[in-house]
Image (cartoon, rainbow, N blue to C red; front, top):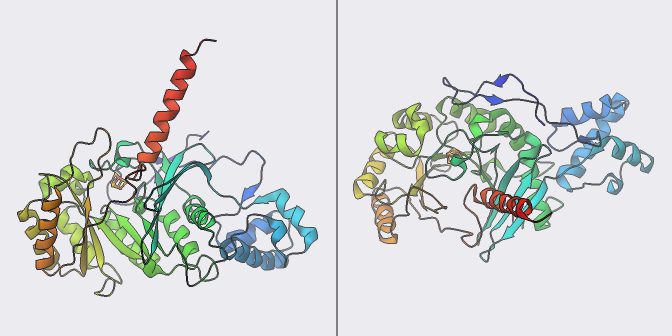
Length: 398
Ligand code: SF4
């Protein structure tokens, strides 16, 4: 149970919703989960538990390698740590994984996990295999404050930020499921990560930065920053810091080219408008023609999909001289969604106009349509099932 705590300030000049920041409850068995600790925190955790400081430094290094390079979850396999020390470690620490509440696999190879935090909140991650890559879509928050009207997660209230351990835990879980330990430089299925799941990563900056540092560490999960993309709906004041302190690729949920429409479908636009957002993209550290910024554009019928919209998109991206590519995403409707997907002809025409404007604009193939693969859907489906089971239990004769 979370205890009430002072609201956490959200970066930016306007706080949309204060997020309660409370320490995670301790594990019932009192052990400390090592996942998510930085190298120094790992060493300190050992020293705090009573290990002599020089030994803590050495053991911390060894543990780091076993956890993030070898994927170990059991101290007894750690052959370079004295056997006699295994029970000492196991009594005090655990190398955890998120609890999987539900796992789905689509006929197209997409896999989705609904996982539960120790304080009982559910969030999702999705693995999407392609011919030349495999991308894991990771969540950064439980729910979201931003209420984008086309997004199912936006209909959920924000519960809390995920910790660095919970964010990196999604990657560890996927590596387990794909059998990708020890960490190999080549031949992996999980090659890319996108922070595009539940939540706005730049409203959980510190934890996202710390989690990605773990993911990029060469001795551990060793994913290159060029293979990681952080997707923001446009938290302008945090974008420069994301470029300098995290340094991964940037994707922006643009979705509209006029103030009127973007105000409606991405309400954050009322705080940070299109011009301000594109200027921040132009200044994004590290963006170049070799590392272009991705602009996500969901295709909504009769809302943002006209020829004029496509031409305005080209004009804006050129005006700000952006090294850009556009991802056109056919809308994946969920029950009660206020929009429909544009027709295939409309999507093709839109793409063609943007291409003719000199900007790459592929249409993303919808994946995992036979499972609840759109962001937020699995959690809602699981909640619906849980509620109807509870209702049935209430109605059942005693
Ligand atoms: S699109 Fe992203 S930022 Fe917008 S409501 Fe959904 S999860 Fe939040």
